[in-house]
Image (cartoon, rainbow, N blue to C red; front, side, top):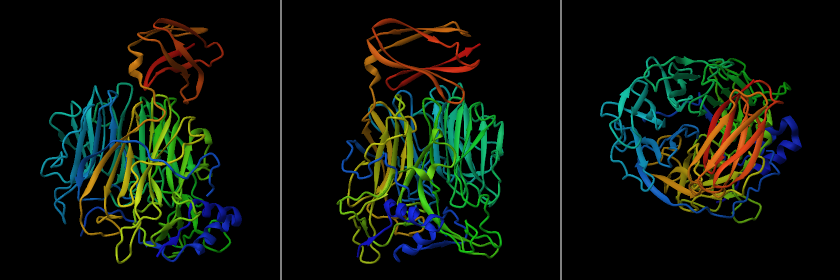
Length: 606
């Protein structure tokens, strides 16, 4: 009853042995149980009517220590179309946490579909909600949450309008106000807040006219007005279905904004702005060999080497996650996927292979189009026999067997990663088409993504499906905010599987940060910098309540660290000198990193 699936190791052998024909050869080796899923247009579901990196160990042998809490439930179980959860978890600066999800109980029409919400006040979670946060007349879904302590709490989702903007002035409490963002006309939105005062709102989503290309909108006043509406980003064609549903993510750190978008038949692209979304630079993280590519055009096929033989191509998945670290460097993770287009007819279709395995990681230091060189995780060989034994029928989430990544950064600039992966030697025991379960996994890097820890299960179980994994992009020194959905049946009822309706649990698992430093022992910190502007030497006076070890960095507008020093401070005043006479004139960020906190100030070098 068990089948051997192609793991990342098997993919690496095929690619290294057969060169450009690797995709075609790998396709021939796929077990019959792994279906070639033909989609007319890879439409999203809304309503019912490789190259293994030597720097990582991929055998997970441990379990992290976490505190699992059921924070909500839903019967409407489709949280994303391709695995990218977006900003569903928001950790506030004071350690409190807000979480949202698509909630619906009244099937089969789910007229009550809307935003489930829960809040952690620093000590306890609220009770599991019994209703959505929207009014009774507003049917929504796919929420994202963000905000600041100054501007309040924001939720954006799509539904009747189609884009809804829901806000309140205080996190965790108060009445929600509903509005439509001017003329913003997007579906499946993602949102984050940024800007110098934290009051800018950045939203991306799919154009709502049927082509599904990605657009960008921006507000500088907390969503009251919008200075940009449905903008097509530089280099985006606004055709060829760029940014197919949910295939994008974004993050913000002050005036630095990052957007990543890609799909199975297009480039995986990073847009980065250092001026709060006014201008953008573009980096191709992973290039689709035929981009720009319109798979509906007459004669279009994936013959990437022009030899007349149609190729099956290894590409980046449609579930990217992006995070900006403390030095303003962008990090990206996404699953692997094989695709094939052998349909030459106009208005044609293409295929994807849900049996593809592997999770890729990239950051800006790696350069353009290098994502596929760095696979950091794959299915775990739990019994160590060199084979991956799973049930032949795969629960479909329209992503790879190891995917749904979520990235986060802590105050020490450690990179944290959560994802979901198929578990070998597990089964739901169904008499027809039995399926194996997926579990949530966690790993981290303490050197900017160069090396990674051994992946560990967040909550190992042979009898639970743990999917739609998400992580708050700002990770605490003590707790890593991880959320996932869990039930006893692989797959979904709203989606390709069409399972019977059931109840999903929304799980928060606050696992301990294995590399975090608790900043509370440091007490209060006061900083004085002078002169500013500066030409030769910058003086910084730090006053610490208690003795502490901290880091000081100067970072330029490109996110490059031009000065870094670790200092052992005594209680009281500590004076440091930073020579800047070899630096180019311009604006720099002086980052003081104390535990989980980053104190940033602008410095002008003349």
